[in-house]
Image 1 (cartoon, helix red, strand yellow):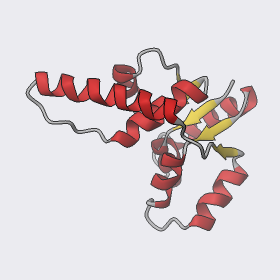
Image 2 (cartoon, one colour):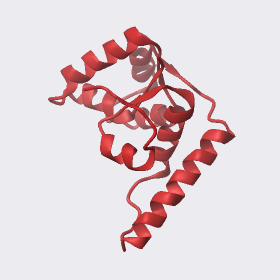
Image 3 (cartoon, helix red, strand yellow):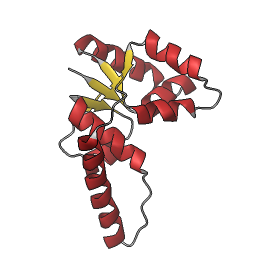
Image 4 (cartoon, helix red, strand yellow):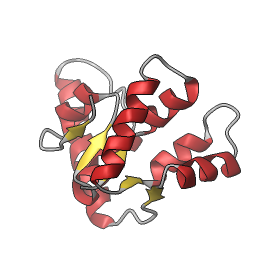
Length: 138
């Protein structure tokens, strides 16, 4: 079972948030069931973490056996665009502006099409736009 990991899971661990211990245990359990993967969007977001360097991020990914799925093919871009468009239309109908970025939709589409589940701290957000996506973790 391949698990895609959202940026917020890793940044919560790095920040030592209260949920970090649970997230580490969840990552370990997911790793035992199969591979762990991030998409290039997550990699880029991790490099923006305060004080992170490429070497730090690469070492963390290596130590945790988190693979980077570097190729985001047309199917992922199309699925992300489709779901982002539907989200933006819902927001307009409700009289609100879009608040989420396309990055979230690329992460969701990648998880949907290239993994079996997504580990994220934004469960409700991904369930709203990727209802068929399995959300992993506690």
